Length: 454
Image (cartoon, rainbow, N blue to C red):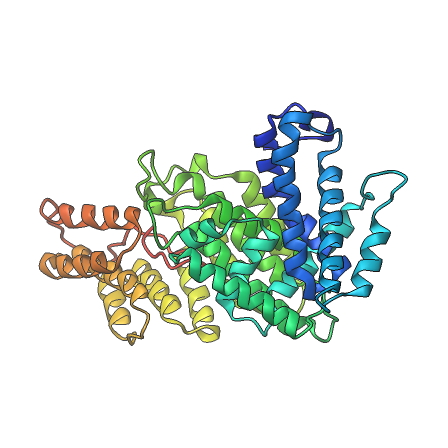
């Protein structure tokens, strides 16, 4: 849906308009204020923008929506930040440089905030992303901070998304902001010499953000569209900046776009998970697929092959297949063999075993699965058990299939997964099956998520 224009914003009910501006402008406004105040004053910038949004809810319903709502908000935020800095002077925490820079941003003759070019706003947000994803911060804290100050998510939303409590999320945010302040982390896109290590951390966070949205690990819904949309928006911003438009960034964006293109077909009307073979491919978003292919072509520049390149190629193999029966499983297995060399994680090994089952049959797949060692991440066990159950079902080993599906069910957390596995168990009582030489398991294997059977 297109964002409201300045001319149409005044026609939107006040509460709805503030909610829209909070979601779409919060991160931009915090980024802009943080550039002026410095990353050490991130908490002041965030508080100022929140204060402006609250004032809008209190003021606009009675006095009418201003002609330029965004400019009104940023001006109120400027004054709030300035008041806080002046108050902090009495506490010996005064930042003279920040006050001077902030005062210059307010034009008392015009009574409104200055206009900024689109690329300047985008660069400010990129710099804030790098602050949130600084190597000094633990990954969970980076994800929470990015969602809060860059994407405008509430603490309750973040807690629900990652199966945590609001208290725990608040503690992460407080510790992260304290680290940024104490280490005086700079508000900037890193220099070329620093960029590779810093960019890797940013991509990790965006990857985790998209993964949680694409296949939620908890809750009543399999997909969380907001998380996917924010991950795509932020990764797109990286591709549009000269310094960060690196091949692996384009590869990650291509991967996200390919996977997002299938979102409308991954669940049915009841919210139940649909296997790749069951999905209505006419519902796949062809515009996103074509956009993904363009970014995949741009990712081909350079001489570094990242895991994102291989995962994007795997996703492309699925979305460009005319139908499930024409999927090029030999090519997919080759890609997984390469990915295994770069990233021999249990998830990659399990996905490779599934691809092997498509090429050589269920017996070969079971052998590959049995060779994968267990680790301390029980969340992954359900993926392995579900695959083992399906391959045993195809071989006609129904008691073993039942055992593995029950094990997978005991590890599942989201309700769509539980319902899917319960259907699998019920089907065993009605589906005697004789396997042939190349009996194929009806699954997909999106490598960017921990889902092996959709």
